[in-house]
Structures are given as structure tokens and as C-alpha cells.
Image (tube, rainbow, N blue to C red):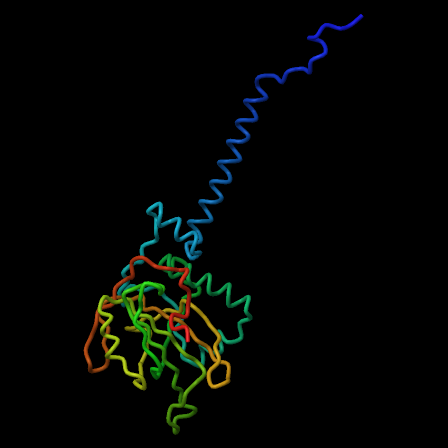
Length: 247
């Protein structure tokens, strides 16, 4: 005798199965969304994350520090900079550059890696910033360290270069920086913070190139030539990368 059709059909899932499935999917979506948002907000240095923050109107705003309230950090001379950074492996340098840029974008809330540049540097090139650079308007000055081997010897070129990037609405001031002039950089009042580490080759020898940006804003004195104003940059372009002067 054949069974009724109802007995041959598969049993139906109870109504609460679909309720549990919908809640599980909603929970997974909430967790994924939370993780993605946390990643975006905690890592603004990544170009994609910075672009997302721009689209939702949550870009980090750089604080206008003065000489009196900048975060505490180490102040290193050219020799100390070389000893501290030159021995980094590629992996260490990549990791350090990520953290340095994150610290810069978040106003050095965690100033453990904050390093200020000090020393005398001879200008080798000057560049006016444009729409393809990390920010604009502004200027970038590349200079090589000058170090005295001893107190009786004239300063000599040292294998440490800085790329001093000034955010300023007066880019024509670049004409006041002449190749061969010497920049005297001090923690106070310059507060030039290292934001990127690069190894380069100079005269067929390895050298260190550090990109630094002043984080104490206001008037900047150019020896006896005059002053110009530096202010926190607005929109940044992390995808442009460093160094600014590519050659």
C-alpha cells in the first residue's frame, strides 16, 4: 500500500530556524562592519583609508601646535640620526614609516617615535609643491648634513640628508632658499619632525634621507632674509608618498 504524499515530502524547518539564520547573518554583518570601520579609523595613513575618511567627512585634522606646546620627543644630531636609522632593514623601515605617518596624521597622540632633527645642513635642491605632492601649497628643501670631525676642522659633508617640507601659502618664498646656503635646524624653534626614512645613493655611497615636517606653526625665519608663515596643511595625499623630491 502506498503512503500518503504528505508522508513522502521532507519535513519542514521550524519557523524559528529562519529567525536564527537572519540574526546570525545580521550579527556577522555587524562584526565585519565594526572591524572594517576600526581598521579605517585606526590606520588613516593608508591611502585607501584616507580616501574613505574623506568621503564620509571624517578626515583627521592636524593640530596647530606652537613651540610651547609641541609633544615631547628626541632631538638627534646628524650622527645620532645615522646611528639610529641607517641600520634598519627594509622591513623595519617600512614598519617605521607606517607608524611615523600614522603619528603625524593623529597629531602624535603616541609620541614614542617622535624625533626632531637638529644640525647644520647645506641646501642641495629646492622644490615647489604641486597637486601631485603630499600636500600643497608649500616647498621642499633638500639639504646635506655638515659635521665637524673635531673642533679644529671645518664642517664636512656627512651621509645624512633631510627633506625639509614646509606647508605654506607663500610658495614663492622658495626663491629665498639658495643652493649652497646652510640651514641651521634646532628642536626649538623649528620642531622639524621625522615622518619618513629612506636610503639613497649619493656619490656611489649609501646615505640616509629623512623627510621632516615642522609641527610648530607660525613665522619661520630665513636668516637675515625675512620670514614666512607656515600653517597646518589641509587635505593630504598619502598616496603621493615620500620623498617629495624624487630625483
